[in-house]
Length: 187
Ligand SMILES: CC(C)(COP(=O)(O)OP(=O)(O)OC[C@H]1O[C@@H](n2cnc3c(N)ncnc32)[C@H](O)[C@@H]1OP(=O)(O)O)[C@@H](O)C(=O)NCCC(=O)NCCS
Image (cartoon, rainbow, N blue to C red; front, side):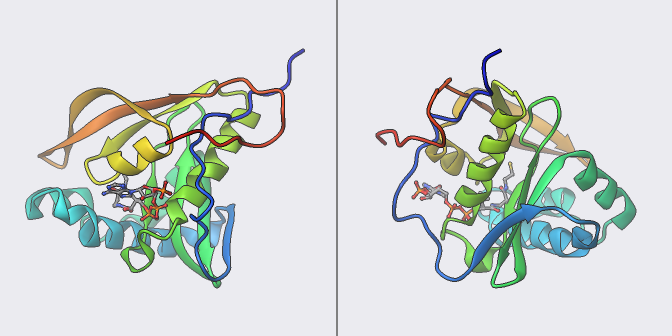
C-alpha cells in the first residue's frame, strides 16, 4: 500500500522564519477565547482594508457564542500559533478537505505566522490521506494562498448575516513525493 502523499508543491522560502519562539500546536479546549480574539482582530484590523465596514461587522460581530465556537474549532483539525507563549494565529482543515479558517493577529502580520500554520496543515492533511485541500479565500488572504501554492478555481459571493462578501474558491493538489518533507519550488 502506498504511503501518504507528501506535500511537494508547497512554495518554501528560506527567509520566512519569524523571530522569537513560534510554536504550532493542536488546538485545546482553553483556546476558545484567545482564538476568537485573534479572529476578530484579524478581520477588523487586516481584512477591513478589503471589505466595507458593514461586511466586516457581519463577518466578525462583537460577541460570540463561545460554546458554539469551541464546538466548531474542535470539530475541525485546528492548529494554534503561539508566539513567545501568546496565541497569535490559528488555522484548520475539515474532514472533507477544506481549510476553513486561517487568521493571524495584525500585530504579527507579514512575519510568516500564516505560512507556518499552513505548512503544518498541509503536512497533516497529506499524512491523513487527503489528496489536496480547498479554501474559500477572502480578498485579503488570496495573495497569501497563492504564495502557498493554491490556485483560484472560481470567484464566489458568500452570504454572512445578510451581507454578501466576495471570496475565491482556491485549491491545492498534493503532488505525490516518495521523499520525506517538503521540497522548494520556484516562485
Ligand atoms: C491572510 C493572513 C492569514 C496572512 O497571515 P500572515 O501571517 O500575515 O501571512 P504570512 O506573513 O505568513 O505571509 C504569507 C505569504 O503571503 C504573502 N502575502 C501576504 N499578504 C500579501 C499581499 N497582500 N500581497 C502579496 N503577498 C502577500 C507574504 O509575502 C508571504 O509570502 P512568502 O512567505 O512567500 O514571503 C492574515 O493577513 C489575516 O489574518 N487576514 C485577515 C483574515 C483573513 O482574511 N483570513 C483568511 C480567511 S479565508
